[in-house]
Structures are given as structure tokens and as C-alpha cells.
View 1 (spheres, helix red, strand yellow):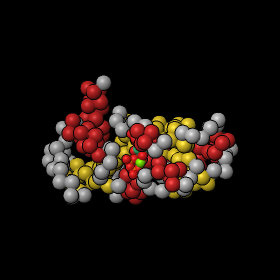
View 2: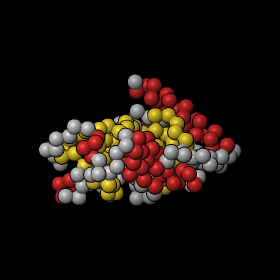
View 3: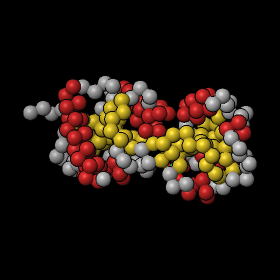
View 4: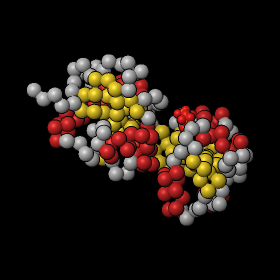
Length: 214
Ligand code: PRP
Ligand code: MG
């Protein structure tokens, strides 16, 4: 019997972590879940789980260090356009949006021309604004983006919006939805035939789980 295992990356901590473990569990895959360990094996399926930082996952997939991942489409759009996108998994739904202070009289994108925008999604914002013929000055920050207008760092922000509560708490309003996202299965372009066969079994199980959920 083959000892080959599929290596799948999931988010170490954050909004996808719990639901990613849940879909694996619902697919009948039991993982010894010592979160302190960054790598865990499944007991009843040829699978190894690696707990990684969201933003690092596209590079691991590209290099073939992991064979697959459960990741937000938004991360692939920002950093992994070359990565193969498999099934949508129906959870972690969010938008990537532009927001400005509530007090700003926003009439349209042209109001952001020449303005400062704080974001963790520079490529996504650039692509979006370029298509609309708008030039903005981007400030790249990795977290707590919504604080930027309040501390005078930027005129607007671009970040993930889910419930909208972070925008609300920071006196911001969503003015443009750039894209909608949810968790997807991402596949490394370097995956071997043998591991692809294991992945197909997992995909089959995910499909049954998703069908049962609807
Ligand atoms: C994420 C995201 C938004 C917020 C959106 O931040 O960056 O700030 O969640 O969710 P909401 O619309 O439900 O409020 P997170 O809390 O993951 O922290 P970070 O930005 O510091 O990484
Ligand atoms: Mg945030």
C-alpha cells in the first residue's frame, strides 16, 4: 500500500480556521488537533494538515510545498492568480470593499482620485482602480486597516467586510464592493498524480458534505 499523503494547508488562526477543520471533520477525516503543532496527520485518511498564515499559503502552493489548501478566494485574487481554484466551500463569505469616513460626501470613485487608501489588498485595489481610470496613493498595512482614516493615515480603506461591524465601529461606510469571496479549495500546479488521486477522494467527500448542508 502507498504511504503517500496529501498535504493540505489551512489557516492557522482567523476566520477560516474553525470552518476548515469542520468541513474536514464532516468529511470523516479525524485530525489530532494539537494546534501548537503546525503539522498534524489524519488518523483515517492519507492526509497531513499544515497550519499556515493565510498570506503565505499562495507561495507554498506555487512551490508545491503543499498540494492543496482551504483558503479565501480573496487571498488567491490578491496573491495567487496562478493557483488552480477548485470547489467553492460555502463558508467565510465576505466582500472586499472600499470604505470612507461616514462624514465624507462620497459621490463616486472619482472622489478617491489622488487620495490615500490604506489596505492589505494592494493588487486588488490597483487592478480595480486602474480599470476605472482612478489613481490613488496606497498605504499597505497588514491588519487593523479600519483605524487608518481615524488616525490621519489615509482618506479611505480597502479591506474585507463580513458583518460590517468593524466598519461601523470605526465610523466608516462601505462605498464600493470590489469583489465577493468565500472559502475555496486551492490546488498546487505542482501536485503529483498520486496525490491528485487522494485529493479527488477528498473532493468527492467535500461535495457530499456540501450537498447535505444545502
Ligand atoms: C477582518 C478584516 C476586517 C474585519 C471584517 O479583520 O480585516 O477588519 O475582519 O469583519 P466584519 O465586517 O465582520 O467586522 P480581522 O478581525 O480578521 O483582523 P485583522 O484585520 O487585524 O487581521
Ligand atoms: Mg481587520
